[in-house]
Length: 73
Image (cartoon, rainbow, N blue to C red; front, side, top):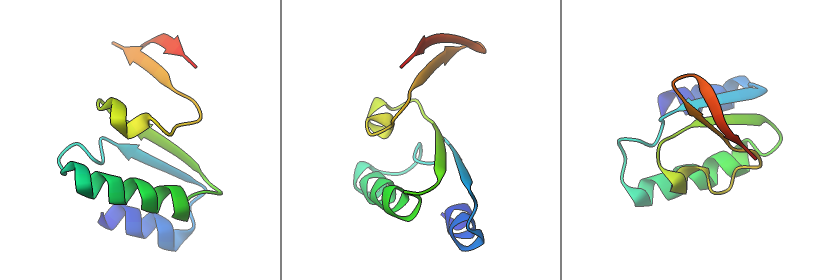
């Protein structure tokens, strides 16, 4: 959460979230997703996740395995 706050303050044009919600409960993840969607609406957000729920609102999804792209939509 500290890194997210730092990205918000710095006005970064790209936010990379690598398993940022992996160790939090679903309620907290939902809050975090809403904050990211609102605060970073005009920026590029790259989300790396294993949970399908985490990427449901993504504009573009790339599924990878062992460094290879399996699906792209």
